[in-house]
Image (cartoon, rainbow, N blue to C red; front, side, top):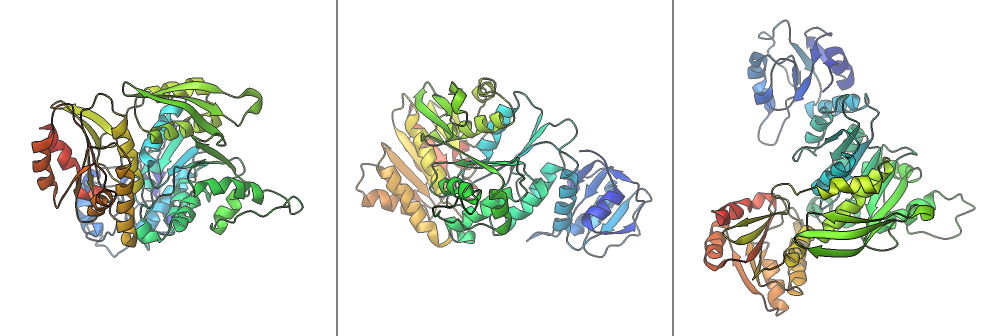
Length: 491
């Protein structure tokens, strides 16, 4: 992080300096009282369970240079080299300050969002860009209204590009994130049913996700999955908006977007990617062998010099083909040739708990336990099917949370999908996931099914039935803690 003065912080947050000198400087921003040291600005967030304002006395004692607070504080312990700033809302102040800090940099910022695959896409885009640039990318799950600002503060003068993951779970959230990150380009991976319980419909999810482009200008580019039924409507609508009134000789299906997104669609370019030939970046001849995926990428943007390159990935799954396609597309936009960018993709390996394939006790485990949605469960099943030299294929699937009234139908649809595949056994954990088993039973598929109430029960059963050369997929929402199952199987 580059240095900020107290004077800058006060102006950016519209705060009031209660004590301390305006020329004091900070070199770090933290919401964690345990990470505070001299030179740190502490921002206490008011959460559902804990109000971090209670940690301010210990933060003062730890030597924090500055503190932002939204409630009255006892300033008697504050030292001469410390400052306290009063604001109305600490989370808003954190975002305002991050937006100000972001404005200090003119580097390209790639925003990544979507119902499924944000993190893997972020990692692949970064891998492609790192073949030429020094890249700052989101660490862990720092993609929320608190996490994203903290990510922005990690940018410094050494970075040439930033790749920022942007996750939302409620209405009007993406606009706040876009105001902070100000993406110059953005990727939308898909529109699924994650958080549909809060947002109500896929149309609402699309509208919310598209707010990622609210800070775009005429040089900006939106990359969308051209095979997603909701996203494939964006390109024709964007093209239609760019026509003059005289040129609009046909009607076009209108998409419900915010006013800010509408303005951006009139300016920005939209690039599609996918495995269909009408996508600007598309893949052909996809082949899987020896744990690797190979395909040819075609760039339909340059008709006079169409690029055709073979891409090799060290990962399985069609979803990773899509991730690689958009990674190449973004790299091309930033001036990196496909022949260069693909070398970064060839070296990419999945993060832990995100489709990581490991072997333990002669059993192949697909550890995809970080989180889950119905769409990503189907993707995980596809990876399980692509494994070679496997005796039996077992899918262990736990509840997908935050689906609201759509929970039963969403889980049931996963079961319907599995019923058409060559899966030997399905084990579910939790009440909601029982719908997966119900769908398989209704389809009279030749698949062994079992449901358990807890991870412990499932582990006991799995340890009895798993044999050498079996392959197992383990997946569920983060709150289901399915990583416990993977750990037990490894023992």
